[in-house]
Length: 358
Ligand code: KG4
Ligand code: ZN
Image 1 (tube, rainbow, N blue to C red):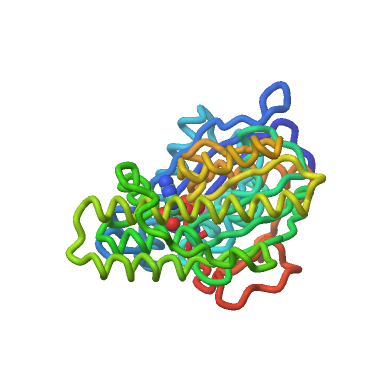
Image 2: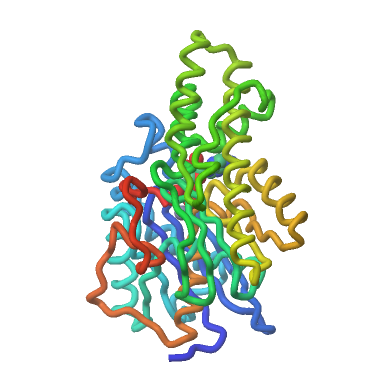
């Protein structure tokens, strides 16, 4: 099936954002976002210090219909004009995924619109094609609450994982640091804010796996180092918290930049680095990667902040690319709580066990 300039509805419910969006191509064939609606559940989960799966699923259930309606209205369209539906079918929290998939299947069956299940990570991986029309191949640094990976992206569905975390995801390191320092949930933006007034050189934190012959990453030791420093300083003053935040942010930015540099060195046929996932919203990390790319004479593509964090425009876009090569899903498709982008690479012991936030 080849649809010309279709409007694609995207649905995303894999974690704590209920999101719907409509994307298409313009008259020149360039990607176009017609609407992008995201309802964050942060307030529902804040008092628990993290995402509670049952609460998330119920919140998706009560909000999704309205969010889809709003996305259609903001795109100035209706289901009559929708040529296909893309829905996140994994990885993520199974209850939320099922809400999104049942909704997509119901619209598909009642309106006779094709649908396709999309890997949430593929949504992140292809965002740069939606925002910057970037060509394959490129290296992708995917950094979020559940994943820290470097992938080589050679084409649609052609993903080779070059590196991953051997323990915590980088977003978790931010979130756990924030919790430890009493900065609340979600941690990343709060750590970044506190770091603005901090001294990044006050604490010397470890650079895990720095001298190892690997591109892999490790972040659990960093979190422990922050705890140790914090315990020594008890009771913490505001300036201590700012300095700890600035130190961990700088260290994480250095680690990510170091791994990307080595990946670019090993793949010198590639001169584009794309950064994606919620942690890619961090200004210090972006700045480090930017200067790395400048010195290596390659291009850094960092999507706008609202398209780095979870959204449905990226799901609609991945669906559009897949519809264009004739792919669709059928009603037997099931949600998958775990679904690596590169299924050929063995999973890393200890990493991504949560399979929750990606
Ligand atoms: O991709 P994403 O929106 O959701 C999932 O992981 O599913 O990423 C969320 C993660 C959280 O760990 C959050 O703390 C982190 O991204 N994050 C940040 C920033 N904004 C969000 N980390 C560091 N700095 C930020 N500005
Ligand atoms: Zn995500």
